[in-house]
Image 1: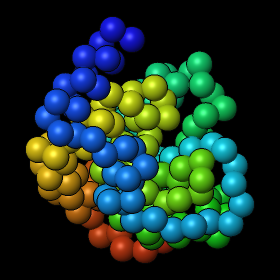
Image 2: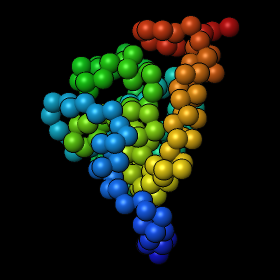
Image 3: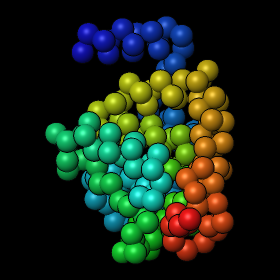
Image 4: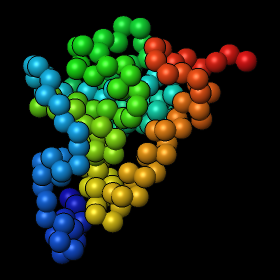
Amino acid sequence: MAIRLPLVGALRYIGFRTSVVSRQRLFCSQKQILGSSGTIRVLYDGECPVCVKEISFLQFIQRNRADKVDFVDISLPAYDGNKYGVSYEMAMEEMTVIDEKNKVHRGVQAFTVMYSAVGLGWLGIFISLPLIRPIMDRAYGVFARNRLKWTGREGCITGRCAKKET
């Protein structure tokens, strides 16, 4: 708590007064999904080694909040995009998180929601800072566009994107 108060004070000092809700409205692509679960759902590509490493880390971090975040592997044949209101193809384009109010967040905003849910809210605030956010958006954009190529699944356009065997 001692670390959090100076950070909040510093953010207020530099004029960062927007709430998480207003930042979400400003930065995320939102879509209402029918129903409400009260749980954050993180849709991730289980065939992406980088994605799996991050999800494994986040699962470890949130081990004491197991009911707060549901990690959904979209690469499994059982993934049903209709259940989440997010098609497989849409989820493959960039990181997608569905918050407890059933709003869909994509890209860097999805990371902000996800980090907050697992107890890393400070990291979500940091990547949303006005000077950091444009850098994160660009860096993540490069990763998202090249992720399939960099993980050995370059020719995948639609359907399940498994790594090509050599």
